[in-house]
Image (cartoon, rainbow, N blue to C red; front, side, top):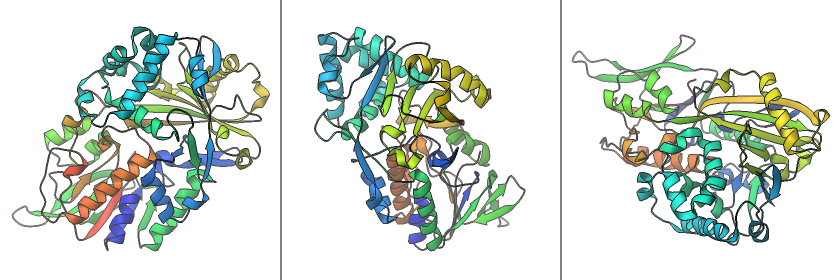
Length: 455
């Protein structure tokens, strides 16, 4: 949507296609009982300047609400608060030396300015060396496994650096306070306003159209290139002077015909984590922590996200909204489980974690399933990125895989889109480089399609 906005502002004729019935992708909203809110959990930090600038441009940044949040840890069968320095010093699983090394690791990572060398160091090796073996086994390893599964073994230290750098930026004073924000109405409100602005700029918006095939139509007798065509799942077709694919890398590899073997291999070489995320509407709060990290084994979800610890409960009719994310590989059997099966798996564990929670407290339970959520920053990640400029004239592929040394969040996505659009518009002489978004050097002056999710 951001790319479409920038191209339209530059005078291009743009049509935005989305496979889903509504805009937003991972940031989309849905209905949970009588509440409409985000399908997945999102939060805005004070340091999310790209997102906040965009929200200001849309005229809704002034609506944002800000609040301090608390952080919990579930470890050793106990729910603990670790929201300030005093609670950190009392954290039972670690002795004083372990805590000092853990704090030093976080401070050291937050001050690193060049993460590229970290791409060649396994995250486990880096954390074990800095924090010590006991802290690694009791804190870091369970958290890595919860987020990455066994893929943590092939993930670089740049992953944890990016995570620490983002969260550390949320603190107003060192490690003392977190300030998180949200737009009343959630991303449903943001997307509604964004669609209004795009339509006002002349952008055509077509939802419910999944791309089946994208290819170059060759018009000249000598086989020279013509326009780029999209065939949709419903059998319809459209032609454009340029197409920007923003689908996950494996989807782009499947849909785009005529890519070189190297381009296809790079797209298919991006390894993703998926998510099975349960949303629950509850009669009352659980514990008041925005996020509760989990280090105990055998818990079937990655963390507990209590959105109503951040968002005023009046937006949920006085009730509480909780997310239970389960990060898994794209081929994990959990994707085949029904909502009811996942509820039977999750709820007994939730009752053990929160003894005051009862079945009668649950008002609604709904599960979102997405196979390609965030690319894993594997060793040497930047060196193997697929280029955003393809060998097919007028065809570009840009997606979350091109967020290097950062975490997947809306702010990073907007930053990526802004860089891509700017480079697309100002580079008149096409040159193709084997790099990420910085390699976008092909301009286009005609009609452009910004293609969203294809599956």
